[in-house]
Amino acid sequence: EDPPPPRTSPGASSSDPASFDVEDIEEVHTLARDTSLRSEPTFGAPVVGQLPRGVQLRVTGRVVGRPWYRVGPPERAVYVESEAIQP
Image 1 (tube, rainbow, N blue to C red):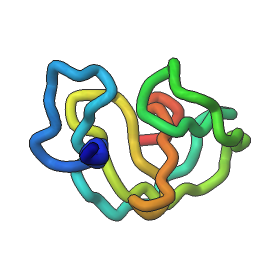
Image 2 (spheres, helix red, strand yellow):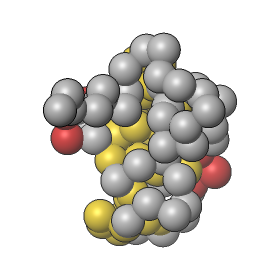
Image 3 (cartoon, rainbow, N blue to C red):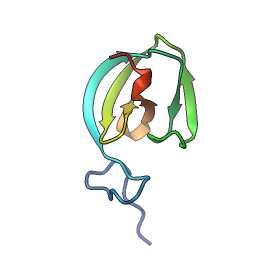
């Protein structure tokens, strides 16, 4: 049996709610409030950590079509909702 494709691969099926594409960026942002880090860019995804307001994050990607950012290297990424980040 073939393994499933990686979730961050370009061209992932948009009919699968667990599929998402990430646009690579390199930015540093500050958290506007205490926030949860999640394993995937949805509120239903498991929380893998928490960070307090004021922490600076190295944002490495913007999730296409969703209000989420990828933090950290793609192979160990976590996701934070865009509203938690100062513009």
